[in-house]
Length: 406
Image (cartoon, rainbow, N blue to C red):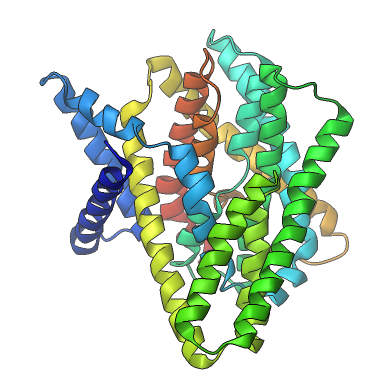
């Protein structure tokens, strides 16, 4: 099945599930679409027990989609730019210290805590897995997913200061998480000699390089926007910025996500204020809002459908269920410790740790990273546990965060 056929199926399912959710289920769009995809997948698996070939045919279609490539090297750039475009950079700057602490120290701490918990649980269940692969799992599950987080924040009345913390962390912490994941995978597979110097070099190249590159391409786009007053041309410039900027960043081996976030913040704040007419702003907002909705719809349908290709044994399901509270505990500690230190210099709202812990949703990025692990005896275990935690995060945490914020 070629790429066009696959996209056609995904768009059709997204439209159908959106209709069903809007008319009957009435959940937040992202949650409703993933739930519909999940239910459809379970129905296909059940039918496969009675009709030979049903599950295999469905699995063949899903396996023809490179989820890791589609998300991390395709859809993510659009989703990050659309999210960053409407964020007030002044609100982020007010929360710069807590965002920086959570996106660096918090992610590293969570990675090692989750790694330790995972090793303990799996060995207690006689699922032998090296500690370094447990750390790989910690690195891919620790970052909060900006797509899932921004999707849920749209339907909650979160205070602006808290919204800035959650949004800022989710936009920036995936860059650190991906760098940790890359380093730990290289250690696990022995593909490259890893030293403290090489780790620091990768981190600087990916993170700092991505930020600088994003500012540079964003500034070029801003100067181009300022020279014209034609919304068709200006929308095309932003589209080229997202697609070309992300692709070039990946070619240069620097963080594409960080580059697009920085470029989106620049265009969304400086560009909107000084380089666009009101007509252009209106068309730009509508275009990227529509892109955001379409990409989100396809992504969460795809997350729901991924269960068809998973290997889910009794032990894997039990391990995933046991890891849910432990991952939340690691999140609580990795959020609580930086905030406890920063409380010495500034005040925080009483619920901030609880909301940041429960609102730290995992989503498609964690699944994509798990799918990118090279085939081997530990991949299925990590992928199954990751999927269970992501489903819990989106369905349970996503549906209840509004009550916690209220």
